[in-house]
Length: 282
Image 1: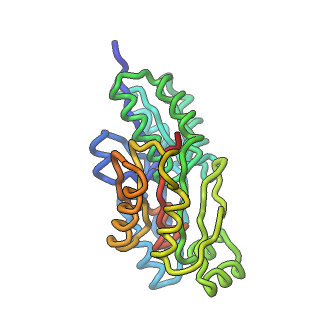
Image 2 (image 1 turned 180 degrees about the vertical axis):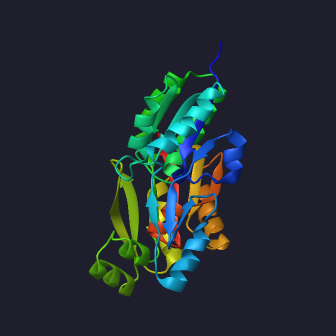
């Protein structure tokens, strides 16, 4: 009898409602603490609510991983429905979401946890790939094994237009933020080894920098698996997102290029006008 597999992830994979519905993915939300209230990422709070709160009060939210009890309840409900669960989390280097899920999974025989070693649609790429593997009839063990191998080939990076949120969140110094903003520097934040770091810095207007960034990341397209490419942003204008998607199409014959918006967890750390092109390398 074939396994009844369901693919799940925490809320940091930023796939958007359409893809989540298309593949039947179940989402375990992180918590977002804003002011004196606690919300569920993507359920009862949006990034625009965070930006509005910051504009009014100058206060950023705190984010927290699902706790052990929440993980057990989430997995337990699916297992009771007869599912084998494969759960994807944000990099274990960035959050306790992974470790809590791993501990919770030990309560069940048929729950597997995959550390994406990534964030946002970097992890989302693995989730979509896993869903397609499941549709092909692969076993849970095969999907988990291949997903962990793919994790090392995900290319995830973002251009940050304004360092205010990174500075306010304690992720860059005041001097670095001031210097970058005065010089119109736009850092490229890249995920490597499960951690975020600045890979290079661009200078100039956001739109011009994005075109150079895409050329640097995509190159001639020969190293990209063209099945799925994401343009993921944290509140950029639609014209900018479409421009970036078209620029990618010029460089590589992508089968599916999707524009998605980053959720509350990513947006609260990077701020508005952050955009990345994410894909899997050959």
